[in-house]
Image (cartoon, rainbow, N blue to C red; front, side):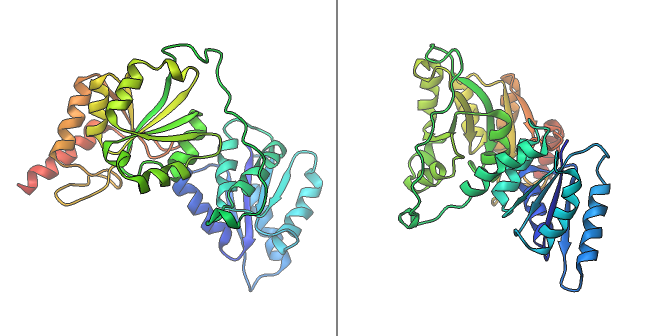
Length: 324
């Protein structure tokens, strides 16, 4: 695995490391190096060397640094020179760049290959509203690649189905899309389909190269029964509630597993862990899904360890019973 050094003036490197973990999960071989006001270049150089020493001797190193020409860059560059055949430095560090670096390590084992890939991610992460202020002419987007069975009936592939009250947000748009590689993200919800503002926000949040849609549950059921217009497409489905997922599955959407990401707390619900809240209807819905043969993968991001859904449901039921 390529080791990553985040280096910055002040605490920026430590902060962006924490932000990246919130979105992509805990990461191995990532070190943050901060250059504080009371330190000199020699202190910074030692911090960098100490961080590198935490990696394996044969690991390649990728430096992600805040500013070209600043002290963190200069000191990293002095170390890089002895390894420039394999190591790499990228400056202008931002969160989209860091998330892309984490995702790239899943399929790339060269620091320089990752570095070259990160340039576009860093630039694409800079957006503006109103869009009319962006005077840069962008090249036409390339069509998403299709598989060899493109155009064949019955070929819509479900790469992930997730219950998440937040729907399309950072963890979905980055980590899950990188690990499942969908061509379409489909929010399946009657309530969201009636809300033009939420629909527009979801479409704007889609990552580059992936189309986002918001459709009612009955429409998803119809598509599942006759998907001849979606040959070669890979779909990531998002449900706001387990009840919506149950209705879709019992209506004919062929899902055998649900990823459980988050369920927001509201009055009358209990919260047996940090991100999942249940009322009695939710618990009964999950039990019915189990009876229907659906398995549960309880993880916020792919790097997390899956939790035991039966244990979570039992704890939620006990807490509800205790309220009576």
